[in-house]
Length: 275
Figure 1 (cartoon, helix red, strand yellow):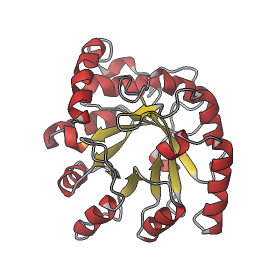
Figure 2 (cartoon, one colour):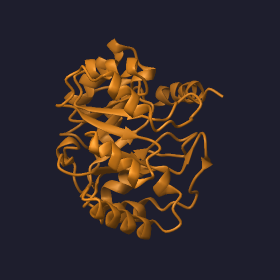
Figure 3 (cartoon, one colour):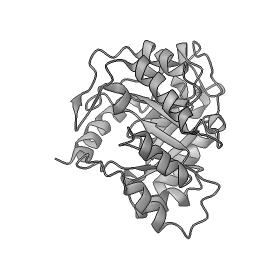
């Protein structure tokens, strides 16, 4: 099944309801309309520490490939837990797509009330109204996916987001898409090990892409490894290759005891001198 095509079809209907309410920047004071936010002007990029491992810990209830992952997920308690482990968690990712991931934009509001970690809004963004909505909700960073945007549109949305006070994680799944992300000038480039069409994961994808791109000057870029990271050995191998930022979702979301698993991960990362 081509999950991406189905998701985008649903998204287009969702955009129709947004356009008109979030179609201009002038209604966004500073960066956030979320007055209950603990931190309404927080730099996502500045919270990344280049001298250690940085985990972007994700909140998601479901996924197209796995179905429901955690139907009893308590968003507030999870955000509070993540915030206790700032030794390695530098940000919270929130999937807001409602149909396949069972997400909600309300999740951002909940998290911002209880956590001072910067928030990444992950969704299938292809219209400027979604960017203004993200800023109004209090997000600190948004995801732009190279595979669903042409270079011109990608550049346009990237610039709108930056001008709206948002950091941008531009995501690639292939060498061609990495080139598109690189050409935006974005500092944050995510390499997703998951194929968005069939949702299969290949953890070697990031290595293959970076080896192919070895001729590019990417030392000023912050590369984010996305999907399939649940093994400290894999994380250490990529860290030794210069990758400092990892987005982890399903591993945390399917945990039976998240507090214990976070504590164990902190211990293991310390033992490997990664934090």
